Amino acid sequence: MQAYFLTDTGLVRNHNEDAGGVFRNKGDQLLAVIADGMGGHNAGDVASEIATTTIQEKWEKTDFFTTPDEAETWLMETVIEINTSIYQYAQTNEAYQGMGTTIVAAICLDDFVSVANIGDSRCYLSNEQGFKQLTEDHSLVNELFRSGQISKEDAEHHPRKNVLLKALGTEPSIQPDISSIGWEESNTLLLCSDGLSNKFNEPELAETITQFDQLEEIGKQLISVAKGRGGEDNISIALVTYDVSKEEGDA
Image 1 (cartoon, rainbow, N blue to C red):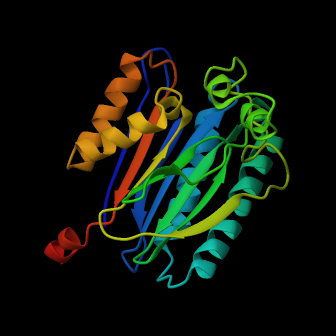
Image 2 (image 1 turned 180 degrees about the vertical axis):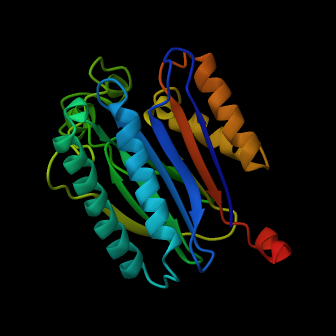
């Protein structure tokens, strides 16, 4: 399994409130995560960093997962723990009150991928059947689309696209969306913040992922295009591809 993480401040903002990475546990199993922080001053940085650091530290202490139930349970417990940590930190630090972060995390094992998300950072899967979004945005605009009040095209250009209905750390308790899906060799996962997804439609993302052989090339191309289209937001990407031949070669 090959993985690559890349983040960029963009062209407008003077600091990066995104965080994330790709991490391995004691069994050399892989976890990818993206967190897009929000809040006044540097609070967004703090929330996304707490989320990323906590999930990394907990993941690196785990041994080996074999079933979707195990992976989903771990994701549920960990995301709930992170939510409590961010919420309590904000309650005891006045400057950080109201801070929060999105999170999308994927445990990538041999037979399946388990994904958890809160907010509008996304996870996509590219495979022989095509390209599809695995996560559901917790946003006002997506709710309007799901209820039939606006079209998909309207949703892509809606002025309130950045309004979230759920975020990590803004409430004392939260329930992430969690699901598992099978995958196989040559499949690729893309996790990203909305700084990327707001600048691409799905066919463009699918084309870029299949256009290049190396994950680093894909990541750099995606960020380059997002910046070329304005780069108003921070942009973060985690890519994971199921590549058995490279795994065996690395062994």
